[in-house]
Amino acid sequence: MNKVFLIETDNSFLHKMIMKLEASGYEVFKCLELENIVSEVHKSGADIIIIDIHSSRQPGLSAINKLTERYPGKKIIVLNDPEDVKLSIRAMQMGAFDDLYLPFDFNDLNRIIEKAGEELIKDRADEK
Image (cartoon, rainbow, N blue to C red):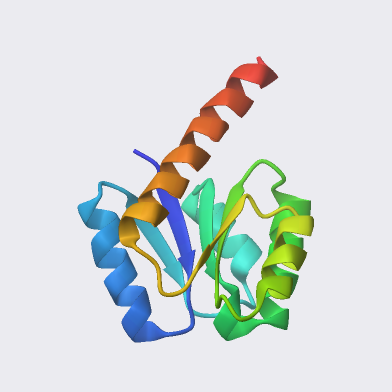
């Protein structure tokens, strides 16, 4: 089972996402604040991180930068508004694994998480 860490500032959307992710079989950890994100991700042991950069913008990009520096092997999935493609491009340049535009079909998010999980397995096999 993949552990997923969800960073979302909208509490209502956060709870909907948690319910859907748990129903899909993921162990979900959450964070509303970006201040302690590195230590919170470390404590969770999650290798897949989903962050809504549309609502957090620059602090979200800063969090991605911190996470990719500290944990280069983790897969970061970015949620963003389709009107702000440049923000997604910056996130991908910083090392985000993939992005998804709001509103999205949850099946698309599941496919990206599965792809991230497959990449993690491949990365671990390559390390051996």
